Length: 314
Image (tube, rainbow, N blue to C red; front, side):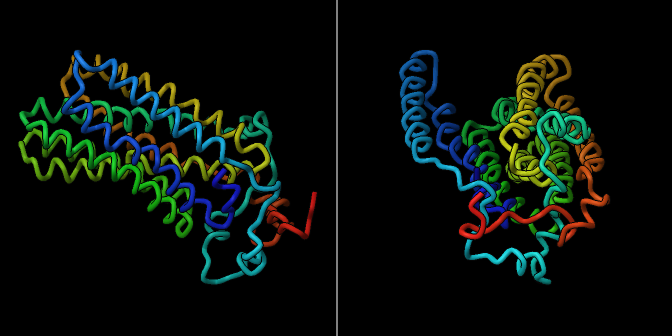
């Protein structure tokens, strides 16, 4: 929805709103760390459920889609595409054509994006789920454990907006690869700082892990219409986002068995290697149809810009 309303700033705006997934978790990290136990879990979970229902319900009631083929009236699409100071259309050219979900699957790029998201999502959810237990296993106090998880969550949200904006400047794919490598480095840093019982560096690498562990989500959300067009964006991104089911099974379910078998050090090492693998997979992403006649036929390197409101009522 954000990408539809802000087609000229898709990365930054999508990243900012997508960051709400992380911002919203921040107060609950401290609630669960300090006051959540077997005696009060029922009423705490009940209150949280009521809060979620009210907030999501009100916000959902106020949502609305822009007109089809929306383009902001205040932005001239021709000037935007030709401006030498605007790298957006050069780094992130619009889709060559509109792909249905089945057509997107047949390009091979949608399954590749699904695989990449599935494995890096597992690393991210592993960090979210096991950050506090890992810190406590190292002998760090509950405050350091909660702060490290809070920092991870806060920066997880901020990082989405920052990297989203960065992707508008340097290119979506390039920003995605950068984020995946940052997330890999963070896993190795957490191992090193934790095993050396350096609380300050542990929090610093939790900061880095939080940055990398969320910023890739808006990249996939923005890459989807960049690659396959806006007309079937909800269906196409919905297919890609199903990868999070596998991420949850790997990062939270399977990870518990791995931690029991090889300990936190071994599990974080595996997570780092998996994050590097996801970056390698992302390097093979290619915009479908780019380089063909469709690209040469349209201004700005491919795809036509949406009509401005009032000029095309279709």
